Structures are given as structure tokens and as C-alpha cells.
Image 1 (cartoon, rainbow, N blue to C red):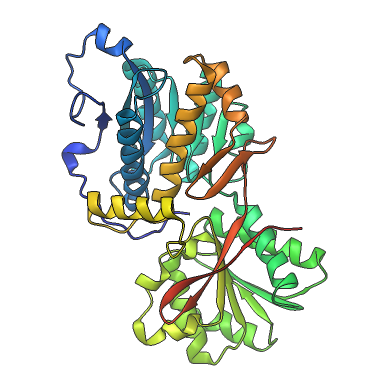
Image 2: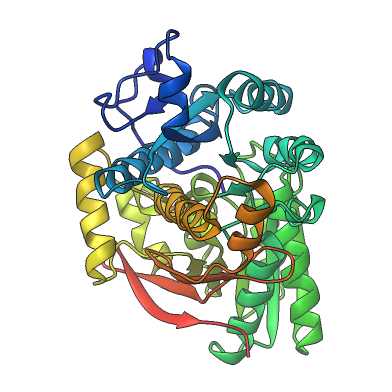
Length: 391
């Protein structure tokens, strides 16, 4: 989950952000005294605020800042204000570990919200385990991240879950018997979902006619589509990010492919990418997501408006997950009654949070348990089909 288009008003000077009520949202000064430090709850953040995946980091961080502001305005946590500091790790695993160490040694955080993409998140999780640091990622989807330790949680769906869920949806709701797959062989998100979809489809008795891979950065998918078209599958699973989805869907349309197109949460944003003349290529497509901007939920719509007003940009899935994640962490610290690591970790395990993405609890591996939203397209707009979970 990482290629969402988003623009941020964060300047280069604000790449390390500290938000404290009573300080007007200004960055922390180097002269902060020990008395002030004792009056705050220090929460660290890690995100790629510069570099090739900065759009995802900015989306999460922007939303977290909004959540922190709201929580502080309502009295903070345990009667203290949240002091939130997010460091830019540039999308690099070693930079992320270095930034984590700074947040521990220099900032003195009691919990970490981060990282954003999977590789840095995994690298930091290995270090956080040694420190027993409560850690929760909004968007690190790689399956083994939370398996690192009991202190590591996530609020996003894991990759295999999305693949299994869409295979079940194809069978149960679309009556598919033959399926094909197009995926990016160089991307762990794509391969993880593709492999899970493949295995689940076979388990459910469907025939997988093709599993067509391509190299990261490819723009011509006609060879893969030609091979698939020969077998006339009912659906084609395309677990890639929206920029590739736009190209694949457009080329499938030109080839006369009639199969339904399926995807995962990386599709969010495809309508901003696909040519207007090719929007109808998505007329028979479905993807699973963790929220829908077209939802009538009042809390979600209020957040989307607030985000737009604050950043002059549309909130996306990363932003929604970031907002929920900050609220989940804050509630856990409040429930723990202290900043003791073990107490926070135990409180996180008991999470039952009604947020923008629905009701979130955690399973035994500290992954979220909640329904997915199946979304389709109608007249160039997203359309919620239904909430869906595997039976």
C-alpha cells in the first residue's frame, strides 16, 4: 500500500514535526526543560516525508497531526498533552532505524506510530522488540511485521488477507470458475496478494488459468493480456498499485478483454490516474479497501472535510488509517493508566475502537479484525458495493 497521489502543505522545514498543545503546533525547541517534558506524553512517529514514497508518509503524518490536535484540545491523555515528533526516514530502512534510535535516546518517546512502508517498518520492529517499545503501524502490510514481537501492532490489512478475501468474493459473489492473475514480480505487496489469491482460488475449486508476472516499472502489458485472453477467464486479479492498474485496465479495454477486473487497496486513487476516455474500462471492476470516500458516515465525511481544509488535498486511505491509528494508540495509553510499556501493549491487545474504517479489534497476531469494503466504479466515481468478510 504505498502509491497514493497526495499533495501536502508540509514544507521542508517541517519534516520533523512536534505537535504540542500550548505551543501553537510549533516545532520543539532545543531548549525544552525537564519540567515541560514531564507534563507531556511523548509519542514518536516515523514516515518518509521526502523521497520516492513521500506521498504516503505525508498522508499518514498529516492525519496524525489532526488527530493529535483533536485529542489535545479535549484534554490529552491521562491529563497531559501529547507531544508528537515525526522524523523523516526517506523511505530507507537504515534511516528508519537511525531515526528510531533518535526518538528513543533524544526524544524519549513512550510509544511509536510508524513506520509507513513495509521494509522500514520491519527493520524498526526488530529494534523495537529489543526495547519492548509499543509500536503500531498504520500501513505496513507485510505479513511478518507483527510476528516480530508482542509489542508490534498494525491497523491496515495484511497482504494475504486481501488476496484470500478477493478470491472468496470472486467465487461467492461473482460466480467465477476461471480466474487469472497479473502481478508485479518485484513488489512484495503485489506478490503477497497474488500468491494468497492463487492459493485460495484453488482451495475454493476455481481454475487459475494464468499467473502472469511483469517487471517493476513496466508500462506495456499487452503480452500478459494476450496470454490471458486466450483462456477467457471470468475474472482477472490485478493486485498492484493504481498507476499500473490504470495502464492495465486501459490496455485490456483496447484488447477487448471482457473479464471482470479485481484488485486490492492499492487501487485507491486509480480514477485520478486513468485517462478520462478509458474510465469505462473500470465499469466491471471491483476492489477491496479499508474505507470509501463515498461513504455517508458522518465521522468520515467530517474528517475528509477537515483534512481538505487543513492541507488543500484530498485525504486517502493512508490518511484515514493514520488518523484511526493515532486514536487507537491514545486510547490504549489512557486505558493503560500509565506510560509503562507492558501496560500499553496489554491495553492495545484489548482494543475495540469505532473509527473511520469501522470497528477495529486485534487478533492473536496483532492484526486488525474488521470487514473490508468492496468498491466498484460508476460514471467515473467510486461506488460502495457492500461490506464483506469471508464466511
